[in-house]
Image (cartoon, rainbow, N blue to C red):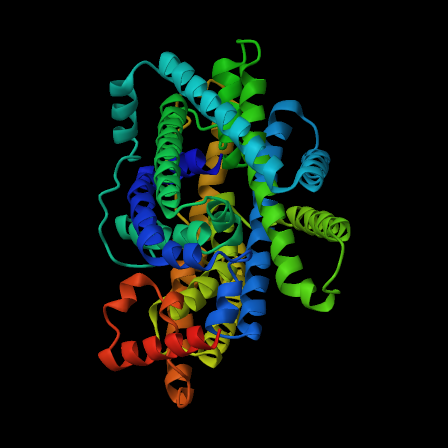
Amino acid sequence: MAAPADIYKFGAYYAYTMIGLVIMGFISIFVFFPVFFKLQVTSIYEYLEKRFDHKTKIFVSFLFVVGEVLIIAVSTYAPSLALSTVTGIHVYYIIICVFGTCIFYTTIGGLKTVVWTDIFQIVVIFLSLFIICAIGLNTTGNFATIWKTALDGGRLDILNFNLDPTLRDSFWTFVIGYTIQWTNYVSLSQSGVQKFLALPTFREWIWGVVFYVVTMEIVQIFCILLGLLAYAHYANCDPFISGKIQRHEQLLPYYTAEIAGHIPGITGFTLVALFCATLSTISSTLNAISGVVYKDFLSGYLKSNIEEKTTGRILRLIVVITGILSMSLVFVLPYLGDILPLAVTGASIGFGPTLGVFCLGFLFPKANAKGAFYGGLVSFIFQVFVFIVSKVYRYQKIIVDVPKSFSVSGCWTNTSFASNSTISKSFIQTNNINSEFTPFFIFRLSHYYNCTLGLIVTIIIGLIISYLTNTKDPPVDKELLSPVVHYFLSEDTRTEINNRELRALMTK
């Protein structure tokens, strides 16, 4: 829902995500996954306890929960908004029903239910995307018409290679920022890695990554096409300015209802697909959170001989509590701006420090527990500060993302045109009033660079503290370092590690 609306509003820069997905696949296979496969941990945050200490593991587990709770909230709000647009039912009632359903089947079935429902849901999602694109192409004309309309409207003006990180969209925004953001989500979050951990061989891990990248590339193509189709359809009568929708995220369901409303079942099937995507995200995330909270936070305080039935009840209770917490957060989202930037920036509060701590562990043999913990903590506090200040600036219209031009020349009601005039004047006045003050560039960063910012702060602070305190730390086990680092280890370090591992083996 958010991606086609973003393309419609700001142009097709989102196409560069396809490059980011490929880079992310290579990073996962060669940097992070070999270590996780070798360790075969239940929670990937157990790695941090092996590499650093218990305190660092608990802190990063907390960051995971923070980021995932926000993702659940956003993933629920978007399709609920769509159903509300089509049916007229208040969005809050829909949200309560969605959460209730998802919490129920995740609680009953566990990971096996999550995986099998995901298989069914992805089939429905692809069918829906294909049907809507086919109907849209038939309604609009052909690819040549869509291309020309998008070109004339500036939606294909995406050859911007400026390195300025404050630009909302550019080539580097997606190739760097999106890649880093998505690498953490797939390779360094429990909800992503736990499914790979269920595979028996590393060869299957590699094929899993390949399948994931190819599948997501197809989804991105559909999203880009939907955004361009919607623009070709509304190039001369923007539904937001004309008052037909209240938020641009409602564009896709409104567009679907308009072009396919006369065909029985199509609008409903599209809504089902949107909720399949939602339920898939929520269920797998709730399952991952319950495992992390139980393993990393509660297991140390429970009896060692606890019954499996009792463990199951505790996991179910965690799912229910997390679901209710996420549902409460949904009611704040309408006041925080567009869905896509909100999801990215909000998740970056946890993603950036998490990625930084893991990179310190995987890629920097000299990084120690103090550096990782305090580097992540400083980064997290800094990320929260930047998020709050930037949102205040945006609420006050001091920072405004200027969209591409819209037109209502094809709208046939005078009311729509009057509405357009009013909104345009208000927008211009707002920009003129606030143009005298320019906030510091960190608060104006593109939302895709927020995770990168957290990563950089964590690594810099972590390495400084590590080098200041790294006096008696023994060499790190090679199995805890990424294979790409092994080639850079000094011969003395390799010898010391091998000797220590041999002594440990003889002792066992």
